[in-house]
Length: 166
Length: 102
View (tube, each protein chain N blue to C red):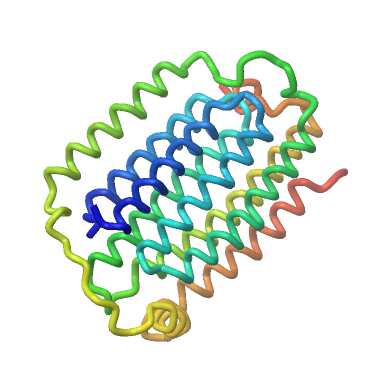
């Protein structure tokens, strides 16, 4: 096994374990901290895939903004969920079964697909430069890019209005 | 070399764990965390397909950027809803939020 493969396996195991703790830990603050570890693992996966810009964005946006926002919300709503018994509902067996079936089914399909034949090609252009150019190029993704900014503005105004104290 | 299948199976596992979190958790914020895990699995898939496909086509990464923006918007609105619910009804247990249940 090459070094990259060993790193991938370590990253994958750490990420999946952290994700499991996110969905099973009764203490929500701990779950949020495990979520941060899982998000770091995904960022490391992006690095392994040569998507360095996305890895940085993952750390800045997901860990820096989303995870911190979640911790804030957990702290603000802490009283109601504290020491109030189990954190999972009565359907958890069905949910676990569904997740397991989905995973086994997807794995079966993926192994039998031609994905294993896909090969890595060498990077000729810098992907960061290419992404930057194409995101604002009229011939490529400028409309989705601008729409995303409108969406973020709408979400910002919407969340202020929703959480407004009357 | 890491096969594309490994990445896809990793993402499938992450997605399934997130799905379990969404379906089994009581707390609305924990459900949002499950959704985050699922969105991350999708991003891994997109980037893996970009890396193993035609590198001149950056669509995989561009889509992943849009998914980031949507995830940020979703969390902002979702947490605002949770805070608002907490203020009005003093609960964030998803089962107890049944005002619209017929």
